[in-house]
Length: 272
Ligand SMILES: [Zn+2]
Image (cartoon, rainbow, N blue to C red; front, side, top):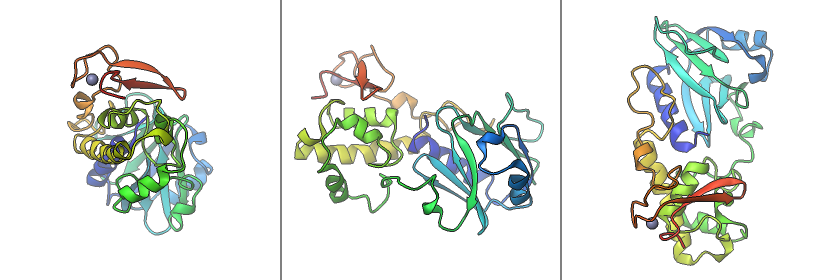
């Protein structure tokens, strides 16, 4: 599932390529991906200009002016691709927005994911965005705040990092990378982490997400045929999906095991 760096990469692409364009027509091939009937979705989006593209956690908010916004959640398999005139979609999109430039914005595989039309006002009150923890890269997500949030927690640290109500937008890839960076084993109890480890974990979360955004995340799905940026962080992964390959620090082989129902990747030598 895409996490903050992957979604941020999509957001930047959308901002550069489709912000300012107007939606001329919509094609919906799977009504269940929407939260309103197709006719209503079509009536309220057609003719509207795409004004701003924002991100909250793993979701993208495409505002169509002051009144309505689209909230997109890709979940496991969803992705979006911009098609230039003459290009054909690879497979049937869940939803396709025809833009006034002749380009089309095709959303694929929104099976678990969705494209919801909501009022632009009070976005944070929308069920899609309510209940999310702080953005780890926000300016007000300070070390002090992180330590306060962590203090009462007793469970294993890796599942905690995946808890969207604790911190929003981190998933399996970056939780593994942040724990390797801070030299903490994924199954360690949050309550047993030392003061130095807590501080290190905070800095690692922010540093790795920032670096991953800079290199375009690890998503395989390109945004458009001329996209040479998406997925550029993949060679920099230290542990995630590197089982059996040598640790970049100590050369011991990276191991994997189930922690909290998900695959944890770690170096048994570097991480304590
Ligand atoms: Zn190692």
